[in-house]
Length: 539
Image (cartoon, helix red, strand yellow):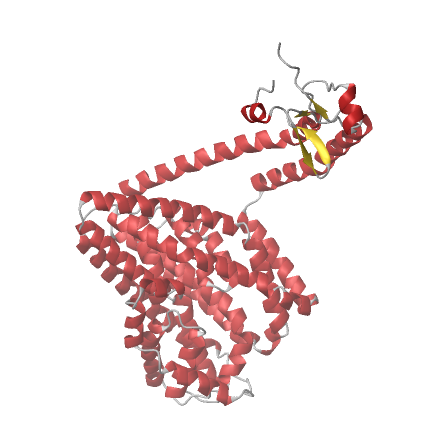
């Protein structure tokens, strides 16, 4: 009798499927593949893994051990410039790849800033006043440094005279359009940017200053809450921050492609010939930025006792990302990561660097001063010292209200030119080379923010202190565990490819019991004896 309960009820009867009667008590046996197919499949698998797969894996392992992200970014920049110069139409078509990189970085910023700031502030004490004192000190430092940047811009503009001999041919209507937008930038609008109506709207619109404000307020509320609630929220945000830093690592693998594509699109759009037309303006800006670093930022490093060579090594990657992409946002995650590794604790890094993106735009303020004097010189105007100092004071205030505003530097510049009756025809001319100048001023913005983080850490007495040592020990242990796991996985996967194919080929032929069937089954039902077998009845 059939042993299966259902077959016992059916009594071993046969069911018809599509006109074919199949015994219900049969067991399927897979037929073996032909020997020739097995040999050919094994040979193909061996050739694939020997000549294609394993060389790719070994090459990737070699490159990952002997190269770094900086070298790949430099290589992609060279390739991008060549593509943009010799194939400008194709370079312009690559712009979406660069935009995709910026979008991926923007996706990271809100959860990364919020989680790291909450863990940094609420995870190291219950002193709410400490947050306020750090904010005041940071804003004072930012204001002093940006004032020096404005002064350097004015001095270099008067010494180098980039506008002398330049003929203004642009449309003044373009400058007037930007000047009208400048009226919307004020301390009132800046306050509204700091305090949002809705946190999720601020996150959606990527308003960094609003995210920092919400995170700081949330952290202060956690300090005042009971221990159980605080512990739960700390664990949630700590886990989120760890995941987001891994997210950053994944996105950075795409950085060379995105940066190279973006640079190809920039060169393809503007062309190398723009360097000849307004080369003196571009050269003056970069010279002023270098002078600012040497005359202002280097003494600040000495006074704050920041290791200079170590600092420049630490900011190498974020500086290069900011320069090549002309986007401060693209360098934000890597800048925060490098400053944490360099010696700044999590709490201070997560607070100072995002705030600096609104209050410490050293490169942008220097550029505004230089461009204002350039417009006057191009229009044949010789501005007195008093007017230049007045322009400096105006820019000192208006440059702080450019957070989250597209083309903010051009808007502030146009408003300044309109206020002091300077020729607005300079705006469209500057727009032609703005992308090239934006690379320089953005990179200095990132450099200045990283230095501000180190200075504030030194002022607070936490630079490479006990808190940082504990955090760094945990990070290094996690990194070692991740590397060990990755190496174990790689060692197991490289040699498993061909053996896996062999095992699959062996498992294709499955023998259960040799097929046996009676002559009645073969004659009555026309079913091959190798297709089904019936269990022998038990006596």
